[in-house]
Amino acid sequence: MAMLDKQDIQNFIRQFNKKNDQMQKDKLILVAISSALGGALLGVLFAPDKGKNTRKNLAKSADKYLKEIKKSSEELSQQLKDSTESLLRKTNNRVQNLKEDIEDYSELTFQELYDLAKELKVKGYSQMKKSELIQALEEL
Image 1 (cartoon, rainbow, N blue to C red):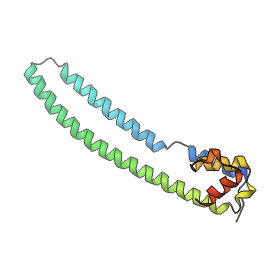
Image 2: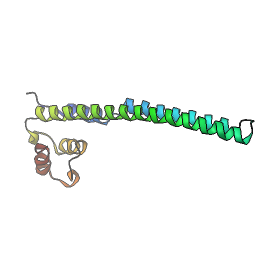
Image 3: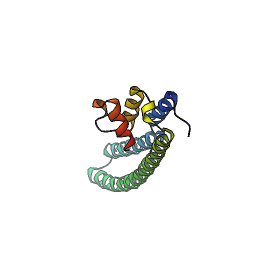
Image 4: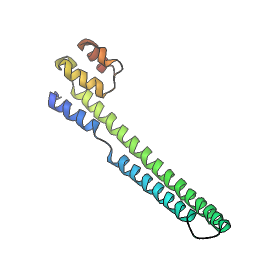
């Protein structure tokens, strides 16, 4: 097995920190849907029609848009769930690969161990000594 150097660990940490582009797109879709709904409701409210007709139209439009929002939010929720599960799987695979590639944590510097523990969210890593970081990482 090849040993990882400092650059490999830094590359792993950078990739781990990248934002998930799909989640950003999903948020944009939700904002667009919400904006469309708000615009439609304002249009109905300010339409030059009798109050009774406006309320009737508003009720119909609101029901229609609520159904659309429910459908869109369910789709968005599923996309977010799928994206999250995919990201979690990839992260777990990378962590496992990283652990397999590191034969001996004691060959890493304290800073490398510290950074790795931070990225892997080892509880209490900030107060640990080098030997404690090694032990915590080996127990993952």
